[in-house]
Image (cartoon, rainbow, N blue to C red; front, side):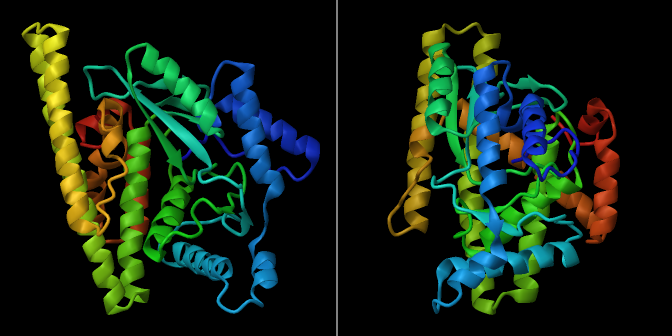
Length: 364
């Protein structure tokens, strides 16, 4: 997940930071809004990060004296991953992930996604310079929930998700955060390479293209990390986890497609709202049962955190991150696994008109 309009000069003084943050909020970082209150929370949230981060090496030095310190170990691992991203994935960190900050909360922002009651197409909001995005973000969970409540009152399906990282794509040096630093090794590789890929390529207003590109890059990064650094046991764990996640995604995709077909039929045949609503509820109930069954099969606890959130908004958001991933992975294969060639071709596609990208299979 990332936001960007263009690179801003580095801001190292108080007034410089204030000006940069004002521009950042006006450009819509973490969602953008026309109200002063929203700009204020965006400025305040990013300012906490800019002003509160510390050099990760200093944190390691302070904590390293304690044998087996978990945070110091994860910070060292993150440094290895950044070096890997630069040397083997062609992703320039440009100062990102060299600092660390504990925000004192479980997520950096909370993202709000909404969709009509009888559609799996997410609602979009337009932001200056960024174009249309299918989510709005808040640095406060309470603010996100208040905004979500207003959308629900309008009859929309809404999903509020905690987001552990985003990229400012060169506006600032993004730090390591407590929200993700304790991720398992393969997930930390995925997150860092995903966010750095946004610095490599970002197409204003095309969330689906940007996120699918980043997911394709993160998956390739995980494969290469496992192949060059992981033990045989770690590789097996990675493959089992990927199969589990693929099964869960497949169940979600199937339900989304079924609902899209259901809504199209209901509109074509002029079903009354009550009939469409009942059919929708039945399919979502079946999905919850299937989702919990899969979660139980793959986990001792059977924990299925998304089961109670399943609705049009959540299912529609899958398109943002996954629908176009096969097209990018096929493109990488066509490039013979050459990342420089892959990036160059992706950048060429990004410069095409949206209609042309859709015709080529890189858009909806």
